[in-house]
Length: 264
Ligand SMILES: [Zn+2]
Image (cartoon, rainbow, N blue to C red; front, side, top):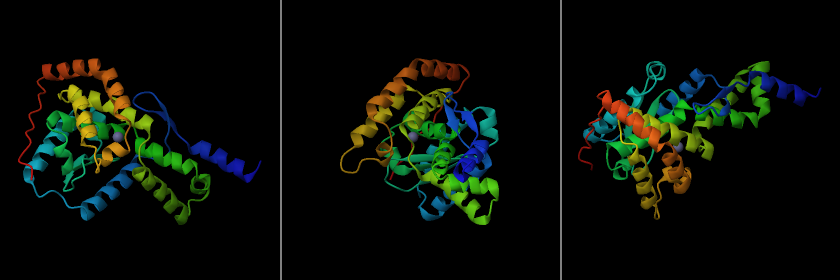
């Protein structure tokens, strides 16, 4: 057996096969706590490097929408995770959520997401990426391409190897999501926003606004995301179920009332 084969076998041993919330098989081998640690570290760096909005009403509004979305999560996911929301002062129409429950919204998004339902569509989509362990999956895929690093961790875990593994996990936070992951986040997101009492039809309107925004300064959010046509198809496929979920939420008295403040 060659050394290379041995390393591959070792990788196979530590590779955890799991399934996404939509039952897609995934390779994820970083622990949840490791990903949460990396997510929190990246989040704190962003908070120290990027300006936070000076507009208190923006923070109240975004926090209100995020709170409804988080409240709709399965109690295990809601309670076991320290969810946080930060509104950055940045003209990009963009948002993100990192492992460990760290949500970031750029206030430029508020010029494109015209109401609480559209903002909820974006936040629920980003939370969908976290629920489906997409960062872990990206990190694991990039590490698989670098078998040596992973095997080094198994064999001896020298400081250098651990640093390399840390780097792999960090890389998972930086790489763009692939189309499969995007469509999964859309599918999870539309159900989550509906469970939170928001109008799922508004997710379609939001992505239409995003497309119309286009022009010379296209929102970054679009550049790494699927074509509007495939996105609409994913959303439409879930719409009937999402409308039922929203009606259920409303029947339970869940009616979000987040009001956009005055936007600078
Ligand atoms: Zn996405």
